[in-house]
Length: 442
Image (tube, rainbow, N blue to C red; front, side):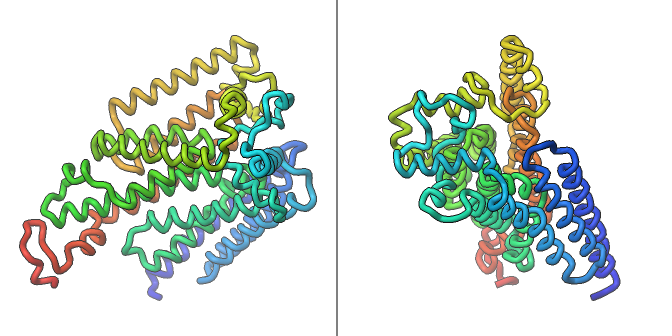
């Protein structure tokens, strides 16, 4: 290893040591100031894991990176999750999803009837596909929802990074595995997964859908370039490749899990329309909605037969329109307004509507042109939504943080060149942009 490469390695090691040190300080703050809930257990475990990871990275050994990820995973996710599974009362999110799995298995609907909705824990604000994480427990498997949330999130993150990294990336599979493990160990994912919160798989599905859209556009552009039409707009408007179909199906699954995926769908559809044409956007939307509807109909047929219960659980309750009060009560503007009474609650809803209108205007005036730009726009929109929603909590901000982080990685991958690897796999030994044979390369 040359001196320059060694210096670069040491520089990366120091930066990651600082990053892990910041994670440790955050976890220590959670342990000290989180109050009487279960969050302090995560902070206690995670602070130690991140501190060990920072010390390992500071040593600058070739194995430091892998050891640091392992230490942070053990301290920030595996250790506290096992502790909560075996030693502490079940967190509310886990209890709701576990119950929904039992209800789905025995009654064909993850929702209690209207007559049983007498307290906040009786409500299930998730869409039917989320109940799948409660089925293993309903079938008698151990761990309730924790192992399945963690495993599915990790596999989705791995798939996301495998798709996002360019084909020319050295050891792309191992690199994607490293990205997925690091992101799973970060507080953004480790904290909510430890508490059994259901947002991480929805986030991972959304990022995977965006990554597939980006890769599908790259392959399509390469084909257009091979045919001598690099701009390829006509081909783009007509084309439909497996990556686009897979992206639509993935987003359909996310939309059948939780309503927080729906703002992303709206912005992605606008991006597809701006880049590929209205027909492509209509086809994409139709596949997403059909996939979501088919999943709901197949997994929870009884829920469709009782739409009043479905709407009361998934719409009225999150908007604060029921007699029960959601425990999601972080002191953000929307919640603070809602605590002022009916007038304050109405003001919060009006501000939320105004924010939605502002985002719609921005989409009409300057629609995002790439999946990375769409992810950034989704991050901005969700930030406004979480700030102004009557029932809100700080934890929801893992959505914009994750989406913006993926957008930065996707931009960096797109900025390494005009998809030379994609072009090469189509054009090497075939034709040049002008249509002449590549005799010098064949």
